[in-house]
Image (cartoon, rainbow, N blue to C red):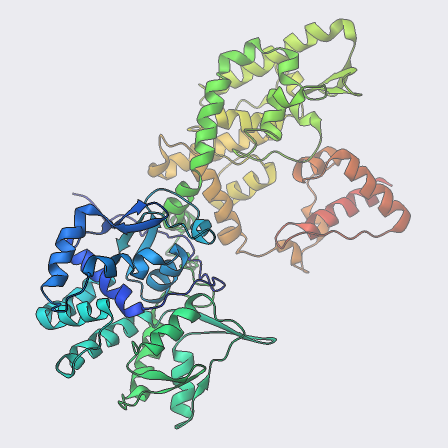
Amino acid sequence: MIKPNWIKSYDKIDLKLGIKSSLPNEKATIALLYLIWKVNGKVAEVAYSKEVDDKIVISDEIKDDLLNLISSYITQNINIEEIINNNQLFASQIEALIVAFELVWRLAKIEFSISKAFSSERTGGKRYSKKILYTKNIDELDLLVEQSENNYLKVLCLWLIGENVTDGLKEYEENISKLLTLFSEEAIYKMSDKDEEIIFNMLSVYDPLVENPGKGVNISSDEPKGSFRILKNALSEGINPYVKLKDRNTIVSAENKANLKEYSKRVDNYLSLTNLNLLNNSYTFENVEVNEEIDNKEVFRRYYFSVIENVTNNAKEEIDMLNEFQEEYPLQRIRDLSLDEYALGKVGKEKTLSYKLEFGKYKGIVGIGGGTSKKHGAFWRNKGETLEIAGQNIAEDETDEKWNEFRNELYTYLNEYGTSNDPLKRKDSDEYSLLKGMDIVLTKMLFQYYPDRFVSVVSKSRLIELLDYFEYNYEGLSTAEDLNFALTKQLKKDFEFLENKNLLVTGWILWGFLFDVILHGENYEENDEEDPKEIILENYNKENFLDEVYINEEKYDDIVSTLKMKKNIILEGAPRSWKNIYGKKVSIFINGMY
């Protein structure tokens, strides 16, 4: 017996309120969109066009069936194929089609047949082949059409060729317009008039019309853009049966005296029931109240399945990087790596493993920026004149010997963790004394070699916050890699869906979960009731500080020097970038030292 999948998560919708592309002849474009779907067996996706020079035209696969259908309802002696190829599905830029069909009527998604930036058609006049990905709204339109197929198809074919609908078909045309209006009630528009900017939907227009009988709503704007352009064209073509344009900039109630008051109430009631936040236009993970019935693990489970698809799609490049790393640096290579192939600090450092991990091609897998080169264990100082390993300057005549010892410890440690069932507790052993201070790099390397045994989280403080949240025991563990291993092992035990998974995506989800749920999306450094001294870790020192922030040792020394002389400094950064908490840490650290 199979069970339902967890609800999907979707990318945040770009409202494209600033797009300047317009879409004239909207009725004709809507009509063709439906007719293409009908002659293609009502499938979900149709590649409808092909490229000819700089234009696109109807594809050969559907042309004949489409022409035959339209010809059966059109008696005029006209070139139907030419009308089709001049339709806005072929003539307009893709961004205008996206705004109309994805953001206003939600009948379909429009994409290039071959991946391209949506801005590709903004200049030059060239059009690229496209495909239509239909939504359930096309099924609703089809339900209407099937009630009186000949009459509704006649209306749509008249829309397509730009002819007026005869009196005997007006009822069917109005029904189509009403349905399209229902589809569009969740659309968002933006208008700007001098210094005033208004974000609105059609309910924002209906209500003042109801409250002020006989008056119109002014929609004058400096320059109509995005969905607002689609709206003005739709009103001018009479697609909304409840309101109309009196002039270019005034919306009034329609002459048919439709019961706008009652309709607007129904729209208001509907919008109140939707999960869509119209202002930020995103479906979001609902905050789960943590109570006696829903424990922390269930909260994470729900969060995980609400974002997994979206996060996985966004991580494809990093997963490819991970595979490339394992091909370029199989574990066996670490045992044979030369000092110049590993260490920063000399000419050609861009080719070293340390550089690639922190700054180069593998930077994006897991970030380890900030702090000093000490995190790599072995590096060159003084422009390549002095080798430092484990915090000790190495005499020139001992370079080869010490490098071999370091390399062997590194290889042995990475290799041993690949089969160990328990944390290795490196700091409690003399066996790995040369790997001192390498927590963040070792954790990253262990994840990259064993992405099914470690998650892509390398920060010790973040790992502790996650362990505390899940109430996992980490007594006696003091390194980031040990904490990571303990967290991952327990997560895989509690959440069967993580077994045998590449845990890069899981690490990303844990980061989001940390801020969205554990920290409730807030900066807890802003909590005035929290004693900043309690934030300081036991034995907190300069090295700890540099491991947690994205500044180097030189910048740190500048900050300390400035604070000692001027007693103040301004930290700039985006929200949730931990300015306050690190400011408190360095302040207390300095005051405790000096």
